[in-house]
Length: 433
Image 1 (cartoon, rainbow, N blue to C red):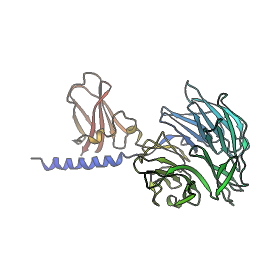
Image 2 (spheres, rainbow, N blue to C red; image 1 turned 180 degrees about the vertical axis):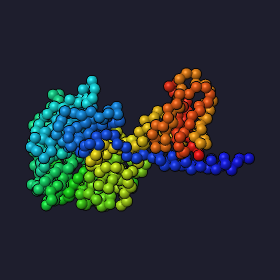
Image 3 (cartoon, rainbow, N blue to C red; image 1 turned 135 degrees about the vertical axis):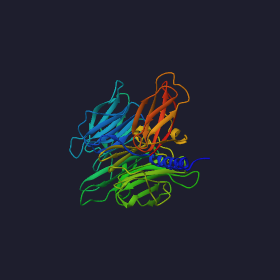
Image 4 (tube, one colour; image 1 turned 90 degrees about the vertical axis):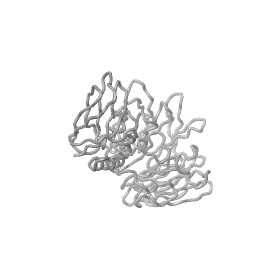
């Protein structure tokens, strides 16, 4: 018959296991650059991250950041191909420019940047690769210009300004906030006025060689998604604004759908990603109150964690599918780059994420742990113990068929047993005082 004491311990263990499941949920983790404001991010896969900052450009690779030799604020980054990128640099001065970056193989920062064309405040970029000669579109104050890309020479031909309405992005301090190729072939441009006595911004669409006004809006960001309830739905332009929430525009039927922004605050940035869980896309939006998600068919936003710094921009890390954002969503903030993920000690471990959660917990009293290994390791072996928050707690060399060690504080821990460079098993430890 089981004693009351052991029953109480097991009950406590189960409660602590439940606490582990809650504690080990994804949250915003700082990747670095906390001394800089982040203007833009680019991460096509999980190998590297490019960040445009208030003081230049940096690349994240192999758990470290490396700076490019650019001393101006970098406000836009665009990938042309696997081996080439474009970067727009320059603040409010007249010394801005567009750079091309060619991939080099011998190490970080991996790209050699070369100045291509002068451009004042190149705050937005888009590329049309469907044309016989690809075009790079770049937006600035009250200007959007196009330049042909000479692929063979890895160079950019001179910019030609597109025709557009006067003061489309305002009067006092106009900004082209975003350029977006809808369906990969139709250019949309949006912007707003940053001034105190701000004039109205605009949403524009390119027709032949002229940008035409679709609607007067203070646009901050543009993306694309499908939000219909049926199995086949039209793609819609997703528009983040400073004062009109989030708008969905369906170009074929010329229909508009309005969604209040999270907490009715200005949208700093948004992206729409494909969803494999529900029919349609997922909108991810950043405001001064945090990062939120919405499926485009509701007025309710769901907060993504509690980001510690003011989010400025968002980017997928590789391809996001469904609502599983862990390790796949980046945010550039006023104080560095964050990733939505499990704590680093949990995220970077070699054993499966659900291994400890599925194992039966080992209950110990007063910190004394005796862990049966079932067989002699027959070589170098060790136990690694982590706290429930993912912090490394102990690293213990073991031999024989039992590992004996002590935990100083009560609570929940998880461990992995590695023998011969392979994880033999892992589990949960519950220390009861």
